[in-house]
Length: 253
Image (cartoon, rainbow, N blue to C red; front, side, top):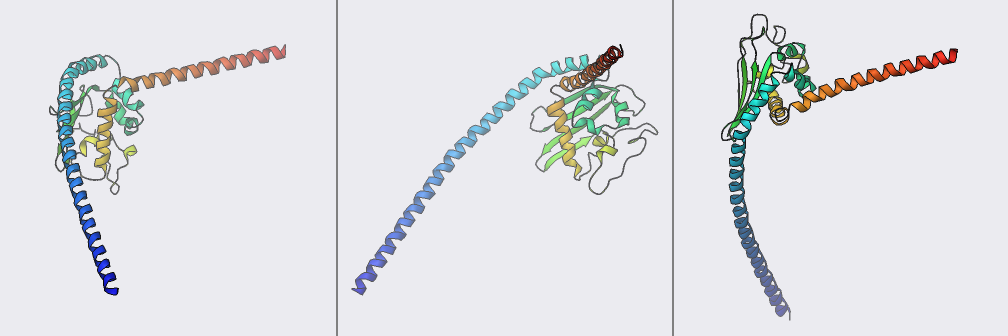
């Protein structure tokens, strides 16, 4: 009887092993089929991405003359880019007092994607002749490569005594930079340096490209709306003062 019991246990164990092998085999086959389906989806996604790029390239060409027309109109508005930058909640914090004086000489701003879009983009500030530097065009370029993003920028040719800022380029403090104490134009001069600020540099570029550039009028109008609101508040205060004075006169009578 003991022998029969032992045989039954071995048979049961063998059956469990066979079932386990069957389950493992079915799982492997299911995963292989699932991978085939996933590969098919990836192929379609790649094709879709290519089509999206083609459409974006087409519309970039259509947008270009409209952007040019917008830049021409902006030139007729005094301090447009200075106002738009100062009104932006992130970019406005990067401009010190000297930067604001320099920004008065900006004639136009241009953001351009590379033709294939995937390779990168450039941001260009065009300036009227000014007392600060010889350049009339400052460009910062972001090129996407396998290793990451290659950043290049115009080396600013400052006129004598007009360095960064007030003629002095601030030194680094550890691995961080204190933007509040620096000039916005360190954004150009630091392009070749690899430190913690690279992430902030990229962030500044992305804000200009994705937020400011598509509709700078939004931020220019923000400033105009704030001034109008302040004027309204001042007028309201004056009216309240007059009402109080009238009330006092009536009490005296």
